[in-house]
Image 1 (spheres, rainbow, N blue to C red):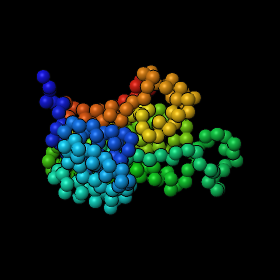
Image 2: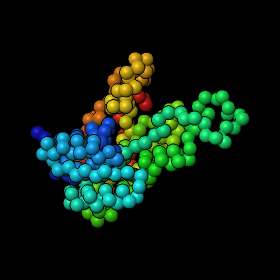
Image 3: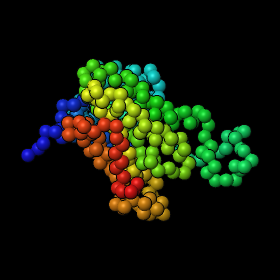
Image 4: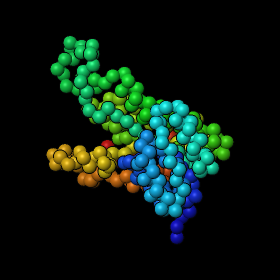
Length: 271
């Protein structure tokens, strides 16, 4: 017997950062569960490929090339989603950014006491700092502001923000990323309280190491692979589909009493 409480068939979802990695896995998993989608990311070619895959599964898929850090793009995304889907039941804020590696010191930012101290502070510019926060945090606020009136009017809606284990455990050279993901969890809690009485749940998931194009490149270095796997009790990486399955659960009636939470899915990494 299949419990209908776990079904999300017929729902409509918007997924940001959908063109690759976790966002792509979430989109395909939701489509597999019977959800029609509007997928958003900056790379239109990759989105079109994803859209074609989803349509082959018998689902509607609207493609929206979007720079999620720009207000006008977010507003256009909302218009595109409503025009293509008619309504939106699920909003997945997955788009993310980070400063990929330690950069050269910024001219003028070389305090004498810090010279030669590795990892003194992520030597990122103000522009790079704001870019990470704009994509990882402010964008979630803007999409929720864009779709919020629709959810509030209908008195239902599911928001799932994609955070990271880095929100709970810091890593070297990721100051802006860690700060933004921790703030996203706090924002999730605050919005859950604001919208709870209106039938809207707001939750976050915190993925650990997940097998994506990026991690596959990292794991080509055998020493790096062994170091990463040694930190995961399950001794494997998660999959993008596993992230999608958790999103599907949080979007289902079975999770109707869960809100304001960050659920970490990391193979025991934080434990």
